[in-house]
Amino acid sequence: MSEPSGKNAGADLRRIIESAHRLGVEIDEEEALQWLAAMAASHPGDDNVVMDVRSGVFGHRVTMLDFSSQDLAHFRQLGQLVEFQDRPGVVETALALSGSAAQSKIQTYPGDADYFERVNIRADSREQACRILADLMREKAQSTLRGDTFQLIEVKFGNYPQDTVVAERLNRVGSPVSWTPEQILAGRIEGESPDGDPLVVKWDQVALDPGWCKLDWVVADANRGQLANASNMLDVTWEAPDGTITPLDGYLDPYFQEVYLEAESIPLFSKLAQHVSSDALGHYVEQLEREVTKYVTRDINYGKAAKRMYNIFRLTGRYEEAAYLRELFDEPTTVLYQVWSLIRTIDDAFRPGETLSMEHVLAQADRLILAVVDALEGAKEVEIVRMLLRLRDSLTRQKGGQELSADCEAARAEVINLVNNFFHDRLLAVPTIGAYIDSLQS
Image (cartoon, rainbow, N blue to C red; front, side, top):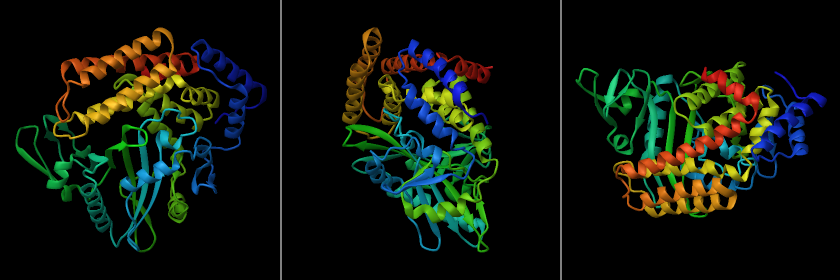
């Protein structure tokens, strides 16, 4: 792993600053050098876990450099919706922020409210632990299906035991099962084999192979006047009577991008952290690179690619490139990243059968338009505002719970394309980042 030092670090950073200035991205060189020095003094692979005594949160030293406690009360309140409760002697949990919520110091315009929760289950056997998890997740889903300010969208639990076609989509054996609220209540998914024979996937049937466990909600944030997506990804372990710790999905996640919300979680975190693989950092970076590859080749989203590249660069010693991306997401112009939150909210609101309030969707669009007007200038502002207004106008003719009209789909596509071009140009402004993207695309 390379480390910035002295003259070389300053020269590399100045070249990146020059590239940034060509696209109007302002970087404070002194502040960036201070951050580079802090990164060099804290190796990601080391066991450097620190606590903010004032707020009671803790996490890896590298992660804590980017965390701000400004919105901590908000995230703790929202955490009450997504978190799982301990069961003395059986279930112990540790809830953390991840994603842009954990990088709140630099995320002037954060995306979704992403949570990560470690769930350790004490049981006599792995099968018993899996059954307990199945009950926990179904009970959680049923108790948070719908409220005045939230609505459950989807739960991922279990893997398909065979190739199964659901709603005309082929799900390969071993792929994650996505459950709608209706399917969770029924405890089953109706489908068919590729040959057309009827098939039923039952909740209890997939319990012994829980795989990727994640819950997604849409929540109405009254303080901010918008809808937001909240998710909780679980890392579930089984603790046997002899104290052996076994991840139920076969892999214990590392802790390089988590900020734990309560000091009371330290004993569980400490117990599990010692079982994290010595190769965890390498595996984590490989996983991030697969996601970046997806977002620059197939599911084009240069904003999401940029956020993942920031984590890759800061964890692999490419600190100058990381410093540039760190500043990029603290720029007023990256209010455009909020377009993805609006698009996802729209997609969730117009799923068949959903009942999300159109008032919240339109209010979120209005706030985004005003923020863009405030942040951008000139022809760039005129173009994005025109497209956002067209999208908002088409939304006023939509009804929740119905598929988007062709006009609305076209406006949505225009906005997505413009935002992708914005982030694409800013990534390629730095030659080394452009070369990295080229290597993934080829």
